[in-house]
Length: 181
Image 1 (cartoon, rainbow, N blue to C red):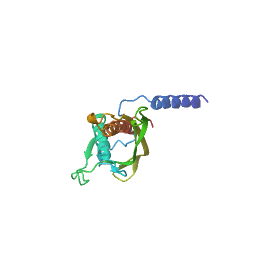
Image 2 (image 1 turned 180 degrees about the horizontal axis):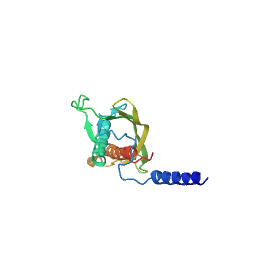
Image 3 (image 1 turned 90 degrees about the vertical axis):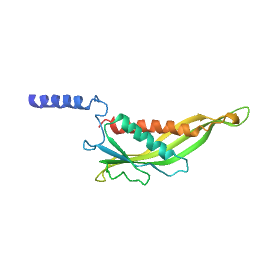
Image 4 (image 1 turned 60 degrees about the vertical axis):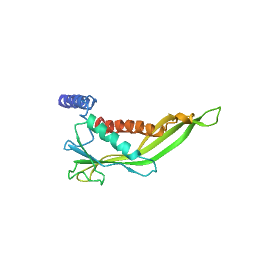
């Protein structure tokens, strides 16, 4: 009986130590230890918006380069990686992008702010084709104000998309690297 109690106590202690969530940044990961390089082709898009897929791809590459130890391979214009092959490939798709009026100016009746919503899907596959990570419904929102004075008009939706791309990339890399198993 004493052996079983001791064994149970040791097992509980090991579980607490290994499962408590304390770790160095980048130490916990959903990606196997053998992954050293990640290829990131330009995101695909199912929407008719200008450059959203490029903005998201650039944000993810920047975030991987600044926050991880992985060597990030980016594709050239034809989709190749200059002869190099990654240990894993991160593919993204812009599934949906909408811009909707949010508020109206009570005096003019014109729209005074908009809400940009972007939904993307991401999949990371190993060299063997095994899915290492998948999220089919990353959804993000950003509000921006419209300009009523047409002489000083600045199109703000592209800045909103850049902010969404940045937030998306941070969340994706955090999910890949800081997740607790």
